[in-house]
Image (tube, rainbow, N blue to C red; front, side):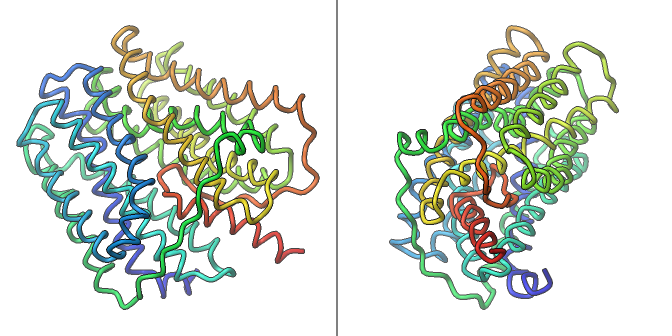
Length: 413
């Protein structure tokens, strides 16, 4: 781990600052939208736009990097992010916000592709798994730290928009000034969705449904909190609990998954997540109960992403994993675009309960489908090792995580 820090500290520091900036704007917009008088459904379109841009960026950013190089893409997208963050309070119109969110999603996707290419190139086969784990921890810590910044100023003012803009600008200094050379960028063509579905129906269906879960949690939690009458402090604590759960439970669930049929674990954890999401619908858990719900739901939803990736790898050869990971990321992105829109529609009709009902239904469907798939195909005798990765990662990190598992497996043999 110290070796990874020694070679990649500048990149990890920069990405940590970027995640703080992204985490602030993700929560802040949900609160500020209510102040500006935007409806819940309008805010759902604003939040969904980020994932549309992210999906587009994951497809176009690699070609941009091949054309003009890592450094230029990194610097250009970072400058655009910093500028866009300042435009939100200047143009308080939900249509303008939607367009800006598309651009910011595109930019962050390109930044992730670039940064993760650097990290993947700096790591060796022996420490790539540790590098990815450390990178994911930095992402989670950045988002959690962002929630504390939400309480530094009035969300109706300008300061909370200036802070993430400055952090994003600072984030690029250590990365662009580091001595690490830009890697040669190479991508693998994504496996066709038909081939991917034949290899792992559960991987495809689960990734699509989980995209809706993750985007609702990441995009609509602050919108839900505002609608439910929570204070800014309570909203920031709830969002922090979601990502703290994802960080804490990622590795215990991963350890268990390497020792049992992953479909059973997917079914059990998805069922537990669904029950947890129903608690605020059926009861009045209070703030401490809500934080526990956020911890459980986030703590399961994040590892489910890596579980589905590892499960798909159980049915593929090592050389096919890079292309399969691109297809899985695309499927997840399609589900993510629809997640906030469905959440907004449900909350307008059912009130705040619609947010948790959507999550409960989606993860419940994942669990039910995993249970059904166990009747259609026997468990594999040899599984690919679990590698921690989150839905916020780009195709580079997802592909590296998938391949790392197979490399570790070969080394163990």
